[in-house]
Length: 113
Length: 113
Image (cartoon, rainbow over all chains, first blue to last red; front, side, top):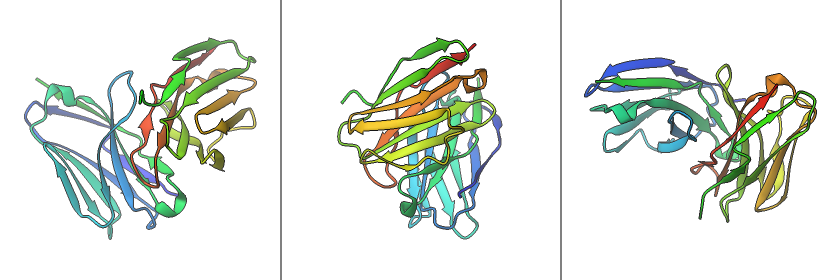
């Protein structure tokens, strides 16, 4: 089955700096890569996703890149703000496997003033 | 739509008791997922349904866990008998199609004492 590894487990940045979270996956059949943000005590919520036919996708301060050859994808947050502080999860899924997503272990991002 | 609705939000029970968690997916969504979240293991997929049919239950930890989806608008996750190590937050999520956004419910925080 799919195995998703996520690094780092914790990340602390100064407000205004950029943050990068990296994930690798094992199943070459995976073709859908969403990123979820989970604030303390809340549900995970989708912030951005990318499909395997695209190498990069951007939405305001958030961007995701995908390298299919190397089987890794990354989340980039620019101009970080205190409200970006949360746990971020990457995930990978394959159409052939229904909509089964395998999640990474999460990254606790702390944006310090 | 009010989103994915789970009940109860919190459950405290004694070891050995039966626990039933409930989920109402977003109307029209074809896929329903049950996840368990713990600090140690992160977000784990327990089981998922497509059009009310269980597709993959390989994540169900033991025979003590069972899940049903009697109709398109309701699913249950049952633990019988419960054990302290079952303490976790259990999330239900639903999505419309293959590899599209999975919407999470608010979760049920289960504590088994």
